Length: 382
Image 1 (cartoon, rainbow, N blue to C red):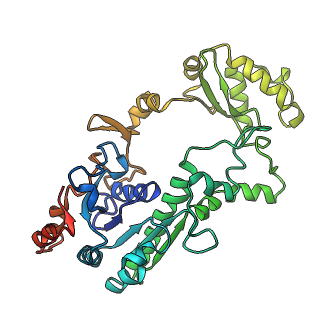
Image 2: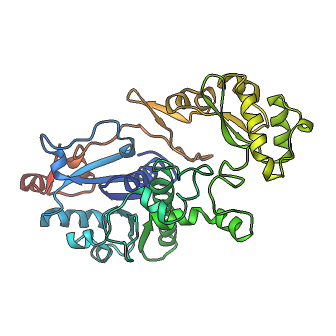
Image 3: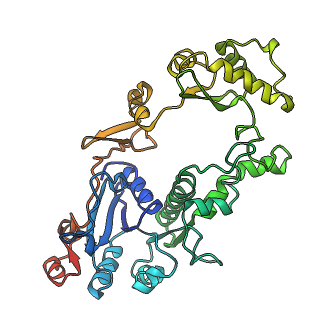
């Protein structure tokens, strides 16, 4: 818990997986106090303890609660009375059946922001269906648009759906609702669905499509590897560089550093010449290694960068100079983002383990019945 711009905001996170924990981590990175409510079974001897490298649990404290017990449910409601935000990522209806749904919680704290994270949303024909990132981005059209001409759609890991279309939109919704509460408004429910967020992310592409500037076939457009000056190329050592020389001035500089004369090349505005242009770029890049090209292009205005592995990225001079990654507990991990001119966003980087701070949390919230709750099994101190 740092001194970021959200210092003083208390968040209750009902433990889940994927985009929910990442959203809570982002709030913690920004200074919020995040209390993760883990299952009691996860904190018991022999329980499924998560290791100390689950970085999405950094900056949080964990209390292990038996949500199926009346005392456990009541405890979470009491915690919500003292909090600003509650986050949950279960299927629609689960928290209602637990007695921790929006109506239950907002009745105890009308100023609370209740954030819900799902793939399909709280309502609709697919709301109760199981799913994962890949399916959510598939039905939005985003997955169809990613890949090379003539090839299948390419899966962008789970960054596009879970974390961009999911976590980030949940955080935006929560912050907007908090802002309204701070202005005198009432609390409310934030329904963040990955399908909604991912579709929203494609607004720019839909604008191109509506304007006749986008072909609804992957690998045939300006930004999807259709254009040879917006693509990746293999170098002499089997590695790759990324090229994004869109604007004319950057394209001219790109050709100069690459060692090609514009007069000897096909006109780049002629799409029929793109395959021939791509062949010449590919042949040129094969003459040097990735790092040799990187040294020629950067710093500079060619819009070319080396494609780094995850381990290479954490140790790249630019990233180390800027502190893009931090080392905590012997492990490198991404630093909090964004940055602020006055507020501090810092993380100790050590993930909480289920139930590790149960008694500490009860004491800090002013509850005097910690011994009774632990003795009854409603909560577990790991």
